[in-house]
Image 1 (cartoon, rainbow, N blue to C red):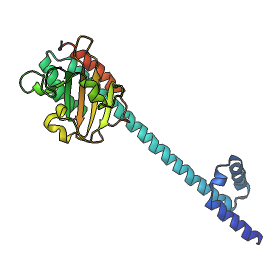
Image 2: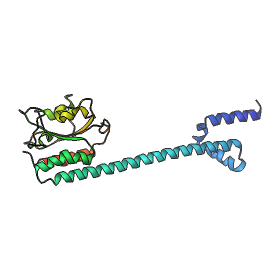
Image 3: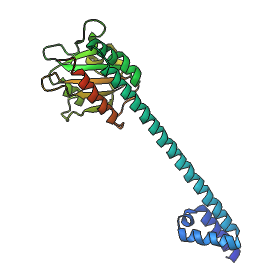
Image 4: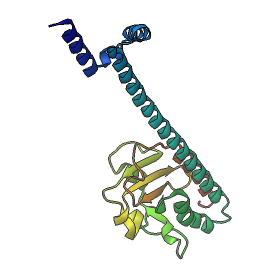
Length: 237
């Protein structure tokens, strides 16, 4: 093989696998120095490959930057929604307004479809309404004794978490009533209402399968749960 043919073959192999050169700082410094003194075709081509690689890395960084900003804005928006919802609940002058805010205001403020409060009520038929007579009766749902933990864990014997996010193959008619067939995901908040009070849970239901899933963060929902249970203690015995 002649010297020119060997050089052409080496050039072709390097251009096919530029990482061999581009990932070696010493080789890159030597080639760039050579380009300044005797710029050859090989060096120029390698610089082009290097520029393309740098452009790809810049594009990747820009994509990551946009994703980080989008996540930050979404988090800020979510925080504002939760804070607004908390203030609305705390401003309720009586239990009826509190429940109306829960079933009408929260879905609008939090972009969900249905909200239900479940309270353990032994001796009352599961799924029965415990709310005030009228349109708010079904806002509060009766659960059997132990029903809070059973609903949260789906009877699997796992320790119930304060916040549970999941997708649903079949939603509970006891919780969602006639709308159960439409619910595809939910958030369940376990409520600590005090030793002398009924055990409870708050459920957010969504018709969107992707609205709630286990990979989502729960910090804001845990904060909301704490505010909600403290507000609720004012109205129930």
